[in-house]
Length: 333
Image (cartoon, rainbow, N blue to C red; front, side, top):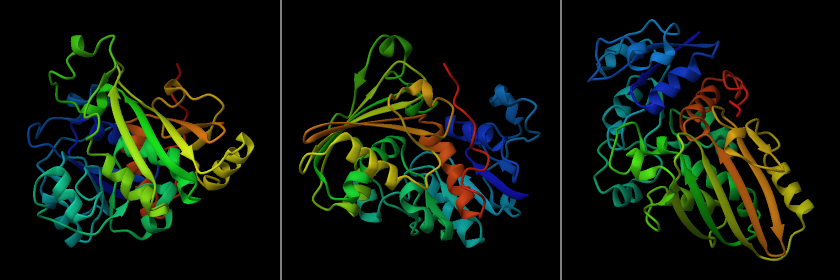
């Protein structure tokens, strides 16, 4: 058994980490933190976990993690940098679920609008692109949920430099906004609505640029997010203008080859959020008409878009099988 810990255990991603890790036969959660809920049982904040953990929330202090080989930081953007350097200096490997280490320092400070006080080099934790680097990493930056769905939709074509431009149209469930209620997530404001927001200025765009331009420098990328009145999931329609025509059989071959060693990518004729809900799968369908390809991807934003992917990264870092504790079917319908 390997000991792991979680800093920030009361939000959606912290709770989802606990849920997913409850299936894992090779790790034990030794400590989970919350300043606000210190001393409370885990199940008091996450009632659905009653009977799975005999743990109380503790303060986010290094002494609670001294016996851990790896710690997940599931705290708000700007907060992880307070803990990550301490953990690394103590010889503890880290998977960070915030945005603090996803971009280079200069880009991060420009996009998020504050100085980075605890910079360390990290590997971008998208296993389908960086599997070998993740295995050797001390710090892995877990990707954002939107970038996971968009990058996976376009990467095979970008690697072959076949994209003229791509427009990502993504729709997310409300949990993507976090557990803290706001006027934006208030039920009457989202019920029976699909709401575009940060239409040309979403911060996750820069992760897409970083990863896709590493394959194809001259790719043009556009992204608009929307929220739909559901709790989980991201459905992305990637409208890709190609550099020449492709037949569907050629397109399918490209995607099958690119993802041949990726256990959580499933190529489907039809993609629905209900086919991936509660799972770590990313379902992709490929469609083409001449010089325009429409690649549709679906993920659960809390699993493959956050906590499940974090466990997938943990598995690679600790030398486990990539799918350990994660190979369970979606919740349907």
